[in-house]
Image (cartoon, rainbow, N blue to C red; front, top):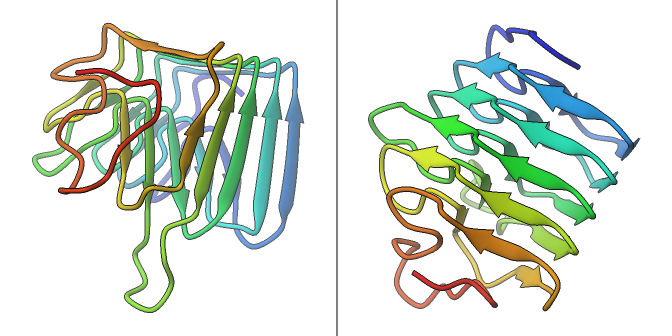
Amino acid sequence: MTDNTSGDLAGGIGNFGGTLYVQRAVVRHNTAPNDGGGIGNFGALAVVDDSKVNENTTQGLGGGVANDTADIVLRRTEINKNRAIGPDSQGGGIANFTTDAVDPPGIVSLTKSRVIENFATNPPGGVFSENNEVAVDDDSVIIKNRPTNCKGNPPGVVIPNCFG
């Protein structure tokens, strides 16, 4: 999934209501004017194993991965050098949110994954979440994101094993 452009959501891979399994994929150089430059998960569950989500761009939320009212598991996956560049953009690497006032944001789980050198117009540049449903194991790394790694999430939202 390389060099694609979406007219709306999910530049590289989009899950809109189903269950998605991705393994050993390269999701790179994709663009979405709205959420999810690389992967947009708007379904029930997405599992991404042993993959690379690199150098994707959005003008919305989640330059690499956007997770809207769904659950996503990222195992042994790189989320690097993605950009969220719109005036209200957050989560250059990963964004966990909801566009529906009724449903809560979903759940993000990082296992042995790397979120590195992503950029967002507004903090955080690494991982953004509207809730405390982000699990990060001790073997995952969230570093070198700009303007911050996780700082800038709504008050009270804490991303485990993420500093600054």
